[in-house]
Image 1 (cartoon, rainbow, N blue to C red):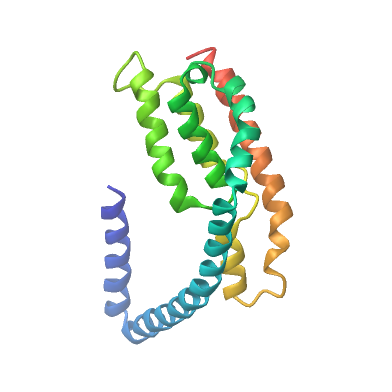
Image 2 (tube, rainbow, N blue to C red):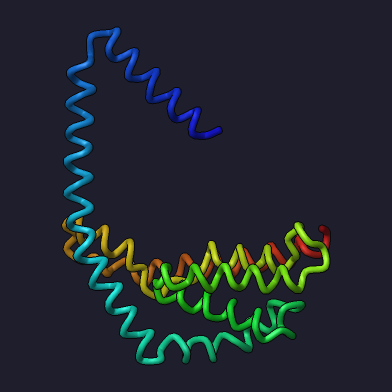
Length: 191
C-alpha cells in the first residue's frame, strides 16, 4: 500500500511540475540528488569496508564469543521460556552479540535461526510468543558499541570527528533497549 502512496505523490508532484512549467527545475533537482547520492555512496563504501574488516577481526579473535559468554546469564533471566533451550538461547546470544558489534550482516542469520527456534518452542503456532516479541524489541533497539554505519556516513560527509558518535550511541541504544525490555515485561502481564 505504501508503494502506491509514494508512487502517487511522486507522479502527482512531477505532473504538477510539468503542468506549471517547472519541468526544468524538477529535472535539475533529480540530477543533483542523483549526483550527491552517488558521491555519498562512494565515500561510504571505503569507510564501511574498514569497519566491516575491523568487526571481522573482532569475530575471528573471539571477542564476539567472549561477549556472548557475558550476555548468556543476563539473557537467561530476561527470556524465561527460552532459557531452558540451549539452541534457541545460543542463536539469541549470537544475534545480539553480532548486533552489538555492528555485524548486522552476520546477525541476520542468527536472528532468523533464533525466531525459528522460538517458534519451535511456541505452543501457539502462527502467534508470536512473549519471548519472540521481546527478542524483536531487543533486536530493534540493540545496544550498539560500534555504530559503524553512522560513523561511515559521517566520514563520507566530511565530519572532522566521525567517531564522536560512539558514546552517545552507546547511551541512547542502552536506554532504548532497557525501556523496550521494561515495556515488554509490563505488557506481558496484561496481554
